[in-house]
Image (cartoon, rainbow, N blue to C red; front, top):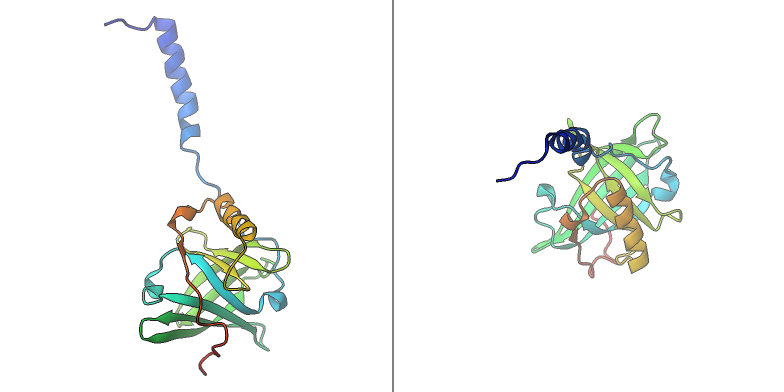
Length: 186
């Protein structure tokens, strides 16, 4: 078996030591958009796609989120989806994290639990939003309409990819039955 000449072997070893850390470069932290106008953000959003979540396991389609500004500055959140037996609905509250331009929220559906809700991509006309969290375990693509044109969807997906999310994990949400169904009273 032939051996590499010593100078070449040494050069290869040095190259491995120098280049190896680059191969495992850490993904930069997730960042929210700079600013969100919560008045414009309020209203109904349709889930276009999401990472599969335990708490949405019964949902089979028509998933929506409704946001309403409250007089105290917080936001009422009503999540709703179609199940095999009808509709399921959860009502919670959200509040902006100070110093984040209202782009990072805390959301709670039952005390004392809360989670991060970071808007990491947002169409300038508020037609779609990408929502995630700092550990990349949650991801939602939301739109004002039940369907998102392909070019808009691609921009939303690109916003997620740019933040280091693996968009191949997304599950796309079928829609068809919630366009005119009012929310249940809470």
